Amino acid sequence: MSIPEITPTEFAARRQRGETLTLLDVREGWELDVASVPDVVHIPMGAVADRLGELDKSQEIFVLCRSGRRSLDVARLLQQHGFRSTNVSGGILAWSREVDATIPTY
Image (cartoon, rainbow, N blue to C red; front, top):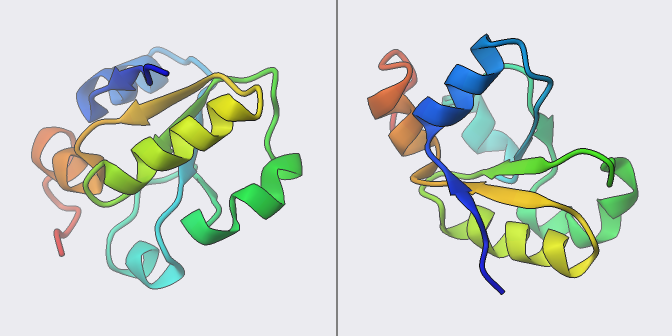
């Protein structure tokens, strides 16, 4: 199963155009305390399978983590459960490089 990807730059541009996009951040809470972007749905990776009911199947879900690995796994899980999901490639590290350099890296 192929998982679509989007760069942080592409995601941010779509959001700036006014598109309503669901960004699911699957990092741990402490990671969001260190580096975060606004307007995310936060469900740690280990809890996603148990909390699928909190997500809207009618919306495409964009998945974010630190580097893109966990988010790819979660995007795959979401697709297996009938969601349209896209991995945000490079995660928050790429977001810091491409979109907002004030976001710390860790």
